[in-house]
Length: 52
Image 1 (spheres, rainbow, N blue to C red):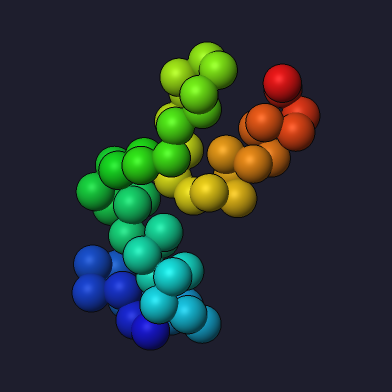
Image 2 (image 1 turned 60 degrees about the vertical axis):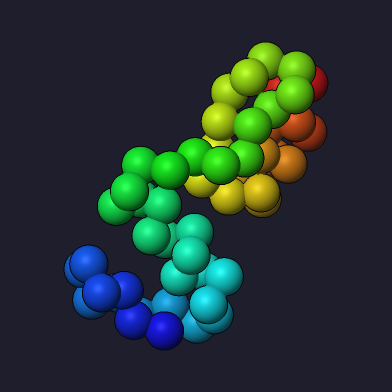
């Protein structure tokens, strides 16, 4: 899967979706405790584990 914005090649469509959030600035995953937002669900889960 190739990013139309920068040409980066990603192995899955999900990875491409998350990668595209870099270009759009989208941070659709929100922490329910502190309202911090993240580009991917895995980043949010890591935040929950390490911070809360």
